[in-house]
Image (cartoon, rainbow, N blue to C red; front, side):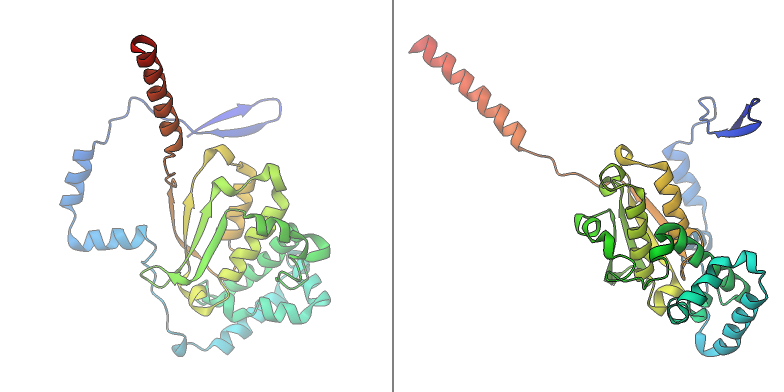
Length: 283
């Protein structure tokens, strides 16, 4: 990585670079390195790549009431300027705060660390206000509540979904993201961000997902890539504002079925042309 300095504005712009002179890592070298790994090393690497290296603590051995009390104590002792949105939510919709930001949900997502859970609750309400605004941030996260004005975008498909009954081999919920369907020109960024927040929030409502985390599968399409939208999307999914953690991300490209209609049409034209020539010469 290199930095380009703007002398007038006194800022630095990070620029990525690719070296054409560095040694090439061939497929043969990769196979040799893989074969040299011990079984223990292979198991550790696979667990790290697929996000399966986390040890889940059994909740039966934990004092959840005591941990929840510690979270509430930390929130009470947090300076007002650092929890302004949370304080606003408590005044406007106290029951919704207790329901949607219950301390136990957030404790599960941070290995039962009260300090991190409290920080995540604060970030949750800050993100909610940023994406939904004053009018809808403090409404229930339902289609009839905060999402009432975005139903048209939801029906049109916006590129992010999850299948509730289906999980991976480790029992984790899989979030599917298709960038080719995320079109900011059609709807704008704000409705899409609200839909992403709504979908992700509902995907992590169950305790199993809060404990084990989620897995993301992204189908890339650079034709519709929006850097600003992607940065804000990262804040929602893996930025520490939801009661879960993304354990692994897998990126790929969706295969498109080859259309045979064009080839058939060209073939028919060629056959017709040769038939025309045949009758023209011998007819």
